[in-house]
Amino acid sequence: MLNDQELLRYSRQILLQHVDIDGQLRLKESRVLIVGLGGLGSPVALYLAAAGVGELHLADFDTVDLTNLQRQIVHDTDSVGLSKVDSAIRRLTAINPEIQLIAHRTALDEDSLAAAVAAVDLVLDCSDNFSTREAVNAACVAARKPLVSGAAIRLEGQLSVFDPRRPESPCYHCLYGHGSEAELTCSEAGVVGPLVGLVGSLQALEAMKLLVGFGEPLVGRLLLIDALGSRFRELRVKRDPGCSVCGSTHA
Image (cartoon, rainbow, N blue to C red; front, side):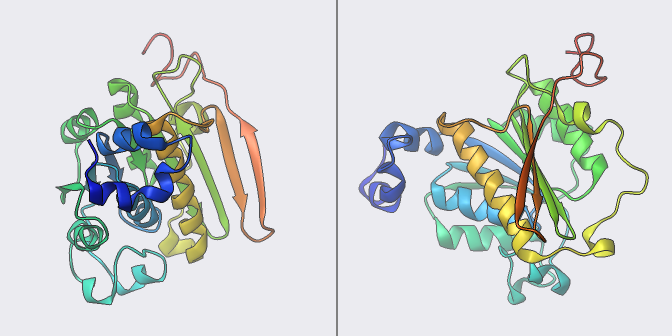
């Protein structure tokens, strides 16, 4: 049940017919893994904590650097040098002491990633490199857990939802294959702060839709964001029957 403080804290959300008391209880009972507490993971963690997701599993092996503060809004100047997980826990606890926070401070290998994914209801990939995205996708497919994936660089962002519980849903590998050898990071190419805030906020919204069960998640759709022109574009994405991760011979 929701106590009086929770009813007051989440009252504006509960007023929505798409959420109501039942939806808020679903959020309270949910467990979510956030992989990466940088530019994308910051708004994801802040909004899901504020929304009342009962258990947030926070995974990041990095420490806070001064260059992070331009966009990684869960951290502050006093956090420089601290573990990103510890910095986020301090901030999220201050925002909402009603939720549980589970720390993963070291890099997740294949076994620990599989265990971390199996322990939750939904995963948000907020990492910044292709190898991590591929590993997270494979773990989600194996565990049949929905994955909300976002990315942003320079002035371009993208977002999609991959849900292996749905037979028609593609996975990350269906869309990107083996990626690009010329992959760039934000430290090499740059990124504008509000863009990662926008993508991360949309990731949090997609997660809430999946957890509560309202709206139309971005399954089978890739949302492309052009921040320079303030334009959004959507592409349809189909499942690849021959995908080496989720294809019929591997599912």
